[in-house]
Every structure is written in C-alpha cells, then in structure tokens.
Length: 436
Image (tube, rainbow, N blue to C red; front, side):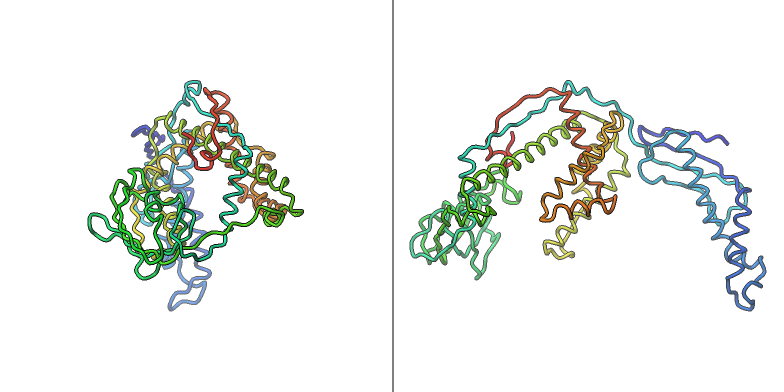
C-alpha cells in the first residue's frame, strides 16, 4: 500500500503503512537457532532441544523485537521521504507483534515542528543602553567593599542606619502570627536594601532592651507575593547594637583587593575596568532579552505538546533539585506541572524560532567564535589554560559555548535589521537590572 501522510491539524500528522514480513523470516530463524545453541530446557541437553519447543517458548519475543525494529525503520523511511520534522515520540498502534504471522499494518500519529514565516524585523524596535563609568561610581564601589569588610563592636547607644543589630521579632497579618524568631535573636544590618525600608526606619533610635510595635505596608509588587500589599504588624525587641568600623582606604586595602604593590591609582583603574566589564555584560544580556522577547511576541504558531511536556518536566526536575540543595525536605516539595507551563511554552517557542533563524541565515557559531566563548568562560578560573583544556577534552562540553555564541550571532543579525534607539543609563540602574 502507498503511504499517505494525513494532516490532522497544523502540527499533527497520521500515517498508515504496511510491513511485509517475508523478508524477516530468515532473521527470525537465525535468532531462534542461536537460542537453540545456548538455551536450557528441562529434559533436554543443550543444543538438542527441538526447534518446535524453542519456537513455542521464544518465537513470540523474537518476532516482536524484529517486527518492532521493522516498524521503526519503515516509519523513518516515511519521515525521510516526506521531509517531515518530527517533534517528540510518535504514537504507534498495531496488532500484538508476537502474534503476527502475516503482513501487518501500523498507524503512527505524531507532531511535527510548525511551519511559519519569520516576522519583518524592520518593524521591530530595541533600545541599546550606554553607561559611562565615573570616578563617583568607582568611589561608591570602594565604599561598598569597605562596608563589606567592616568590623562591628558592641555599643550602648541607640541604633542607627548601618549598625548591626540583634533582635527578637514577631510578625502578624490580620491578627494572626505569621513569623517569629522565638528565643533566638536575628542578626542584620540596618539599611540593607533587600528589606522593606519601613522596617529598618522603625528601628532607628531604639536601644538594647527596648521593644517597639509598628506596622509596615508592603508594596503591591513585593516578592514573595504572600506579603504583597499587606499590612504586617511587627513587635521587635533589640538585644544588642553594634557599630561598624570601616577599614582605611590605604595601601593594605589595595593589596587585599589583589593590587600587589598597593598602588591606589592602580586599584581605582582595576575597579573601573571591572565595572566596565560588568556593565557591558549586563547591557548585552538586556539586549539579548529584548531580542528574544521581540521574537517570541512577534511570531504565532502551534507548539508541539510533546516538546512543551518535555520542557515542563525539565523545569520541574531542575526546580526540585534546587530546592533539595537548599535543604528543603523532598516530602514538602509540591510541584504541579501547571506551575511551569507558561515558561515551558515560551522556552519551546523561542528555541523553534531561533532554530529557523539560524538555519535560514546560516548563523551557526564558527570555531573561532566558540573558542572566544570558551576563553570567556575560562577567564573566571584561576588556571584559565587548564579550564580551556577541560572544555576541549570532551566535545559535549562545547555545547553551551557553541549555543551561546550562536545566540550572539542571532542578536547581531536582529540588531542589524531592526529599528534602534540609544539611551544613556546610570551604572546603579544597570547593576540593579532596572533598564526601563
């Protein structure tokens, strides 16, 4: 019978095919004869078992295995002849293969990668951000490093911003206790931007042994969302106040940052260079995100369920492992597939679009680009030469550098065709990821 590929939907296909069994009979016989030489049957010496008994015991399994491979081969031929790009595993239906004694038919239902037209990039627009590193930026960075190396000493005065305090704390929402430190005081530095500003502000002027009750209104955009927009009532008792003593910005300070001769000018130059590199890395990452977002939003097509399902499983497994590494009890980890579905769809859609762009415009990373990415990765290690060697010892280790270098090619290609605007942005906003 001639195989006809039936179009069920935009990405679903079905095909029926016949497998003639005559050409497999010699293979089946040979396999059974091999079994005959080694198989042990009660009442018979090895190699003396009648073929009829071997057939009864093993014939079904042998035929099932051989016919199963024949189906795979036939399906592969159909896919190749029809230039089909199969997404995921096909659902293949047929009669029980161990019972087959005549030519048989199978039906394969499967998904293919979607066909779509690339969007007109001339209608797309991205923003390229520029940052100039100033002397003030360098000084601010040095101040941050100095604060990180502060030495804290107990004082009897009232607390103020930048002090380290030990405190007992209890919080409540709508009159119900939400969190409590119990008898073990918490330790934190006042003014830490990771906390809601109102909390630390309320503690300014409090001395050790004093207790204060106050309410903090959390912003609607707060993370975690459980506190977003909530009025949280706090009762805090200070147990101790410690004052910071900052290190002097001198030759020893410079040496502690890796400047061998302690030259402060050289220290400033190296810090500026480091800030420029970090700013460049983050602005490039933002540009890539703009491009990827534009590509995802600029295309519409059906996604193969098999690909999305696989990505959901990958994201769930990765999250599960991360939570375990953070010390969470596996019994308490409750992950539903729906939690990852949107991210999985976005990831699959982006991969399909990138694949089409790369193939259409021959944007695969070349050896030099891959090497440059490997050297970039390796520069983060003490022995960069050994790190480079490690990457090239196994070709699979080059997959990530190759993928990222190819993505860079796509970004360059996109930027070369779309509308562009340039905006200056302060370093603080870059480091905070606040590009908009």
